[in-house]
Image (cartoon, rainbow, N blue to C red; front, side, top):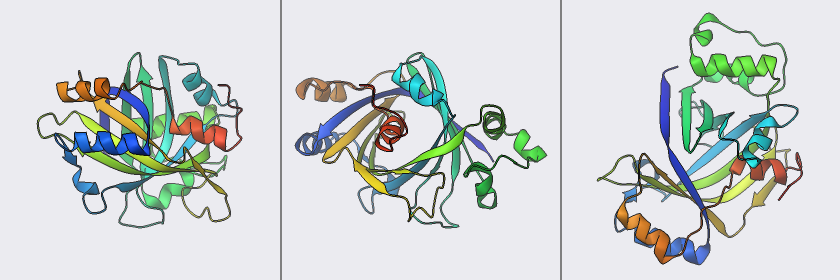
Length: 242
């Protein structure tokens, strides 16, 4: 249950197919695909998001609260596999910077994190883990439960000159209203943002000059888009307020 921590700026943009191809070709001149994506030019990402009965996480994001967080389960396979890890993650924002903390959970304990059971057995080792103990607190006190599942394909690019700078192209976003990470065959999956790609730019202090030129050349405009919020709205859990 070793913890992993990330803290950085994240800028997001929406690209149509033609613009995505142009920008990705430009990015390839300075960056290369992450090793995990080289085989298929992308990898699969699945996240199961939690919220409370009042959808506080959703509305904090919509309202642009500068201090917020949410929990999710994340994995990298459509089907259950002993070889693919499952992470419990908390992703949040403090002012302008985002942070993410995560740890691997044991697959035998998956039912403790997904589903809607109110009776949860807690052991001492879990209470020593900051992420798991915080999650269990919100599960028991705030009644957070898994609500919506997001699937997409990610093409991530990294730089040999700045390991803290990362660019990802996310496409084929599919949404399901469910409380399970797997076995969702009876749950209707809806394709969202068809024909569009979410470009995410992640960096520690500043963008490199070459990417500033890309932003200026294509007149890119930052958007506050969240796959979690798109999922909540597409699943009819909340009303789209925009």
